Image (tube, rainbow, N blue to C red):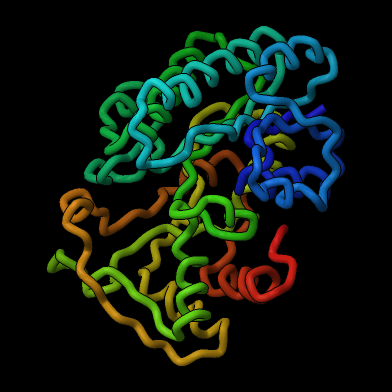
Length: 327
């Protein structure tokens, strides 16, 4: 049995698809649906059971002899959430409880961290697993801090020998792709630009307020969601990983590059308007992110990552421009 928390979410549902395609079943998800359309993220894939998150730990205990691995992707993922107690309960306390269970039951654990742990990037984007290096990171919001806290905990526990048989935390960078539609304002820039071109035939990007970058020249490490799922399936197959790893492409691309990829995929001439970055985010706006992928490469992962142009083309051709945009 393979349990995926947050299995109805963006990355979680694509992971469910990848696990099923690779023959890893039965798959159990822990998530909430409410009145949303998130059930559509899973409608094409085999799901053996659905567990409310509040019942997860009991479910794990009741099925501990059947468990092959836990993928813990469920979290409060909003970078604008202000209720810190809520964030800590979901992203830190529950994660610790899952770690303790997997350690005690000898069940592999792969979980979602975030590039938000790096804060403004002043210290770089190297996934150094030295506890002192992790302590130096300064996230900019409660979400990033909660992810950092669990990374700190996992590395310290692992170094002390209190760990699952193998484990990995993944610091996801700027992920885009199908099944993110429920995320509202937290959706990727890729889908937002597609909608702008579709509705108005032009896009808006932020001006640069940094002399080192041109307007639209701000850079991000954009990663296709299927590549993230591939890394997790590879970790499961490797049966030997232990640590926190970056999950980006290792190549930063500009927002101009992203916009041009969208226009090309839609067969449109590029028309870009540059607008001022809002004052309330300008002071902490990041102009550059790029994952150092050395750590993951050194573990043996050698699959190439999807280029921005190929990923955007696939997203628009195979999903956004079809009657059924779900993975």
